[in-house]
Amino acid sequence: MGLVYLLCLGDTHYCGWAKNYNHLRRRLAAHAAGHGSAHTAHHVGLGKTITCVRLFRGTVDDEARLKKRGPKNFCPRCSPYRSVIRSVERASVDVASSGRAA
Ligand SMILES: [Zn+2]
Image 1 (cartoon, rainbow, N blue to C red):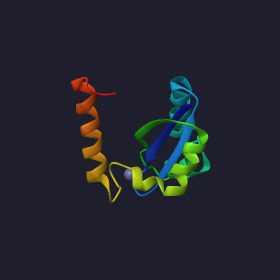
Image 2: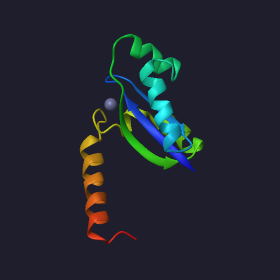
Image 3: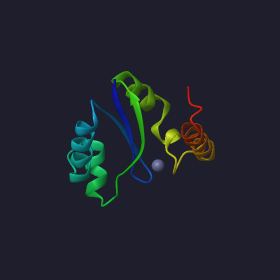
Image 4: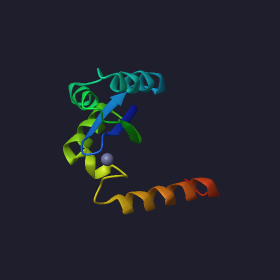
């Protein structure tokens, strides 16, 4: 198990996997410096800002599934389902803070 992250670059998205938070920090720094992947390097070269918008616990298989389903669909900024994403995340926080989480 590791971390699946979703980067929003405005009109395009990238998802990746990191084995832990230290690895994630290095991966995000690499993306921001323009050498994390060919996709992000291209868009950083165009002057776009990279924002990490989602973080999930997951495996490389989860990362592959997210890529197959279209990363944009999971972006809280750009997804056509963004209002649903936000309400589910709010509900998750509410459950967690109320101590009723399983
Ligand atoms: Zn987005």
